[in-house]
Image (cartoon, helix red, strand yellow):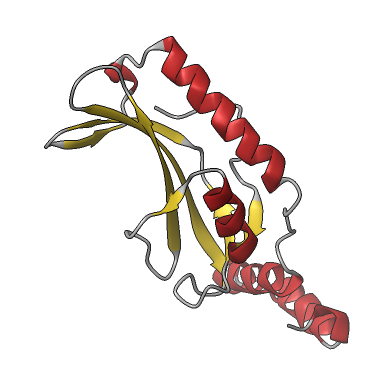
Length: 159
């Protein structure tokens, strides 16, 4: 289930401090990352036998390379999941998560969100210009392409 209203969704953070403060809060960088995505999991034991709950915080690189550790990550909405041994994790609303587990998960995510706000970055200017250029080319908008070219002559806008 999505954990709504946590303030994490959409935040943009450099990968290194993100991983550092996630690990300091007990989250583990999942082995399922690739060059563009990261996944952090936090394990919460459940009173039921063979059931474990997980908080999953995911993000994708808007710049850089996750494998190289130099990515700028945009975070997605946190998820609460239930692992059923040996079948896997289910994230659906129909799982009927106990209210105490949901509250514990939200509190943990809010703690992470407070730390994340110390590291939030803006999307780098050159990324904005690259996206704008791609859009202008798709739309055939020469006026925008000319303006981007004019802006990039200023050293402020270069990588």
